[in-house]
Image 1 (cartoon, rainbow, N blue to C red):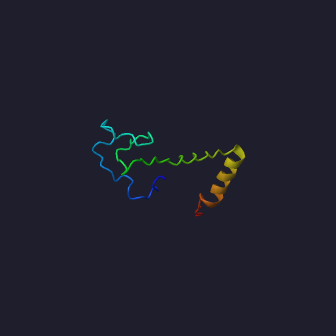
Image 2: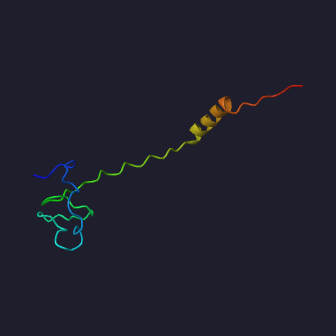
Image 3: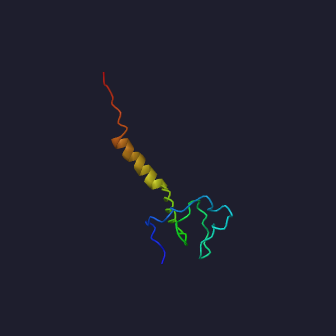
Length: 85
């Protein structure tokens, strides 16, 4: 049984020989101890990083929507005031 990711043995080993070719860069299962911080014991926990989030979709306005937004901005955001003398 492997220790949990939150176990105190994770990254608690002696790192002086970890990944240096001194014979402890591989655990008893053949997994690499490649992260530079050896776990305490015979096995090294391998983390599976979560996949990156999907990219945000680009918003593309058609001509009709663009004209509508410009009219809306004209009605509410860009009012002119005229001073009649």
